[in-house]
Amino acid sequence: MLYFSNLKTFSVLSVIIITLFFAVPNFFSKDQINSFPNFIPKQQVNLGLDLQGGSHLLLEVDTEEIIKERVENLNADVRRVLKKNNLNYSNFKVSNESLKFVVEGFNSEIQKEISELSMSNSQNILAMGDQTNLIITQEENTIQINFTEEFIKQSVSNAVAQSLEIVRRRIDELGTREPSIQRQGSSRIIIQLPGIDDPDRIKSLLGQTAKLTFQLVDTSVNFDPFNPSKAPIGSEILASDADEEFKYIVKKRIMVGGENLVDAQPGFDPQTNEPIVSFRFDRIGATKFGRVTQQNVGKPFAIVLDNKVISAPVIREAILGGSGQISGGFDSEEANDLAILLRAGALPAPLIILEERSVGPDLGADSIEAGQFAAIIGFIAVIIFMIFVYRYFGLLADIALIINLFMVLGVLSLFQATLTLPGIAGIILTIGMAVDANVLIFERVREEIRNGSNMMNAVENGYKRALSTILDANITTLIAAIILFFMASGPVRGFSITLAIGIFTSVFTAFTFTRLLISLNAKRLKPNFVGLSKNA
Image (cartoon, rainbow, N blue to C red; front, side, top):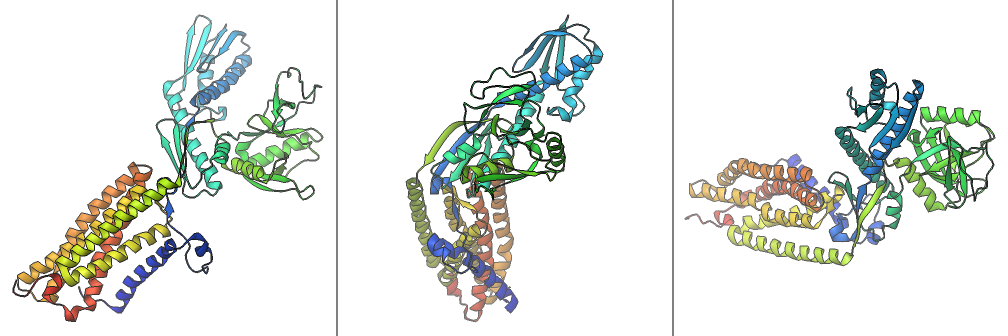
């Protein structure tokens, strides 16, 4: 047990040196780190919102808009079915949750056809297997259609999950370090952005649904863009994104949708040097885009984002490559933000900002100072206790404890984990737990010496017999940390991370590193090294 081969000694020291190497940048400023050679790691531990300060946003997905969109889609489909069957209907009423109309000749075959609408993936309605998602009631000639409660709940749940992923992608595209984005309740999302004191740009990005469509401009009517008349059937009036007073009459039919977009990048027009956004479609989108531009050469083609026309360039020639560019008189930052929105995808529903808070750095500085003070006090107390009780072995345990703290810091830096205030509490707890294994081992050694074993055998048996107890204690604590990580959220996760890392480093330093230090002094071992005389 006490014998360490050269390879084993090299392995233990290599692990320690590597983790200490990653811990070094935390003791320098960012300016100093940037001047380091490239082979030196530059990652520092990321501080959470409670330590660094930043912005806190509470958003809510507009669930009413989700159901409204589903009803609108159903409305168009039901009308199509009634017209296909040559049924005359009247008093068609569309509410936020149902359709109601009067029709003659409504029979079971037509009811079945309408019921199957909700099972079609092409209807932009969530499919729920082979079971219809509609409740159709008939009272004489009056028909009412509602979505089932299960369908509404599932639609809202899926929309919130999709919104969460899109929000994450949009914020990640900005390069914000270690954002915390979590779901709260059935329809809310919490966003914490450490280090960002002005969240206006984030709010601007999240406030846009980013629903991109390509639609033809209706040139069949003449109108004044600043005072347009009523749009003809099949068309709608949309405002210009650059000037709200300027209007376009655009055909309602969507020729190509943003869901076929696979990439969007900001850039500059080589001729005018103005900022643009270049985009590229997938195979299906490229086919649609090529066909539309081929059939409508010489006609204006509106690029619509969130029901506003960004630009309406005239199609000069067929665009068959599946790519193009958007120009709208925006600056470089606006072009970059638009590209981010298009790459991340459209939100299924608008996001409502319920709460916005900015956390000042003073709170973080106070927290860090208090945490450091508590860690130092606890650290000194443990060092004194170990030396007083276990003499030389206690000194070796203290050296391992110092190495352990640096290893925790190095691992946090290596994996770019976020350190929160509860995370500091986890490190302080690690300090107390780190010496538990050594206490168990040293007490086993004392027991072996009392039973008459010589020092070498006592140390070897002490480590051997304490191993199972050490593993049991730390595995149970690790299980608790893992449960906390997956079940908890926010700062509590930071506590579980530092606790889990501390468990691994503590077992390594207490059982392996201290044993290495003892083996290097094996020939000089004496009972009083563990605070026990030969006659005890």
